[in-house]
Length: 354
Image 1 (tube, rainbow, N blue to C red):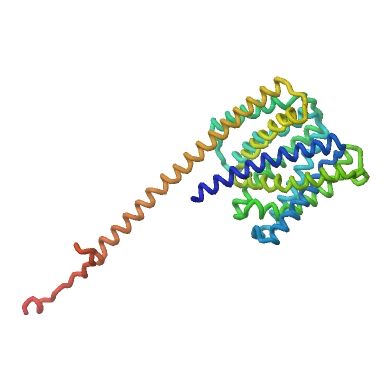
Image 2 (image 1 turned 180 degrees about the vertical axis):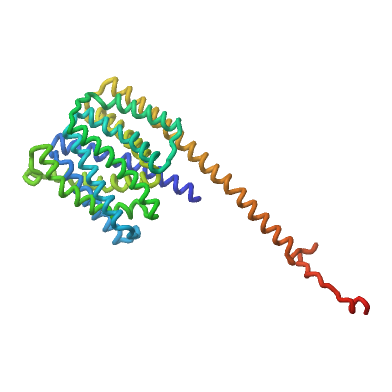
């Protein structure tokens, strides 16, 4: 099996794991927050990351992956930034309407495209831009209902967009720069993310809910769903880093909107959530955008690989011709029988006279 084929299988597996685990954790957390009134989302996320780190530590002890230390300052900055971005997204949801929060999530894709274009000189073709526009239009129709603006909420949303984009771009660039896997990066950054959220989580949750997470009554049912949510989060965090590392931050955001559409559909099918023609139309448009984005991405990747191969061929031809010329000019020429000819022997005048 070729390396390219293995990479494609790994990418498909990461995308599938990300979709399944993310939809599962949304359904689990919805039952935990809506039904059981456990509304401490930021603190719950810190527990997710702590359980993820413990799981990876056990995997390291079992030698399922290799620990590869690298720049400690980069890891710490990346972990703290990731934790802050999660906290800002939760604050954005708390201080804005649901519709404006959905617009905040939609704005992450164009912001990521802008940052990668300005700072990494990455080019996005017109077809990719068009497919992303169709996708964002569809998700916007399906999810955005009201747009109630306020100054503080707008500032928090702007900060959440910027920090989330930078954190996801760093997830991709750090893995490529330091030659580390998604597992190695997640293992080293998890403690910083968990510590950041564990420190700010109770404060943010108390600010948003006017309740104390430590004074909550933890029934067996609540504990069961918390443990289940933490177990699923291991797959969510692992697949997130893997998808961004194998593809790109923009592709991960496209995948995130696919999850949103699936959550809406599952909510209607399983939980009988209200569903309108607007939701259906928006999901259909979003699916068209996702299909176009996938097709254009695959097509451009194939064209890029073909161009790389074509640029390498002249170099190989030139090197081969150099070898042939050097052999032809040397003393190791072959005779008709395949035996190397001896070098010519020049006779002196005495030999000729004899």
